Length: 249
Image 1 (cartoon, rainbow, N blue to C red):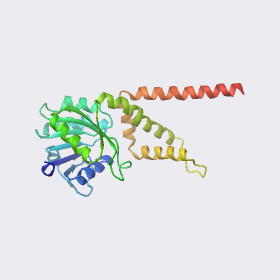
Image 2: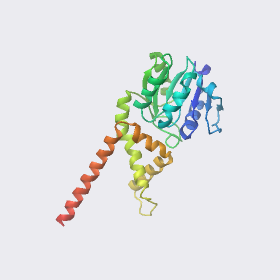
Image 3: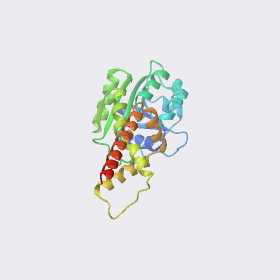
Image 4: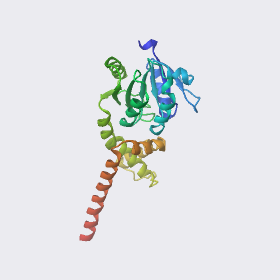
């Protein structure tokens, strides 16, 4: 089955190019479409929008904030046998959009490869990938779960709500802290401890991603505000403790 499948990748940004390369390296015929980027990774062929939309499976690799507009514009041209998957870093929002905009006969799965060009540069084996059924047959879901497992990925099957709740306190907080630390313009120092270097690696990794991803993670995850308020509350608590210690002295 795999040999006869054509996989479409819609969007060749930083993640889309990386994902297209991974699909090609794992044995798929990959066709990509991009309105701007005309450079494709090795093993990937540039195709027309129409060709990509009618592949056996179609991965949308666009920003979270652009997903609704892109899907609304392209949904009517998607093949009746095409399996549609998003790769957004939130899951409730794109799942809702796919339910609203895709024809009922088009199968859809919400996915989140929880890695990218930085964390996956030495291979994706052992890295986590979340998969959430939206509107698909069990056999289709099982096939993709097994396929990703063959890559050596840690495939996690969960609801979109559980994903967003947990991601707010893992990926969301990591990006928030990384972007906050970057505002301090911290630099290298001979006194750098292992812990400091770890913090700097968080800054580097999160700030390598587009700023739009940071905005979208905070805006489209319904649990992100709760995370930010919890973080602020924790910071206020620590600051208050230090203030009391200063008053004692």
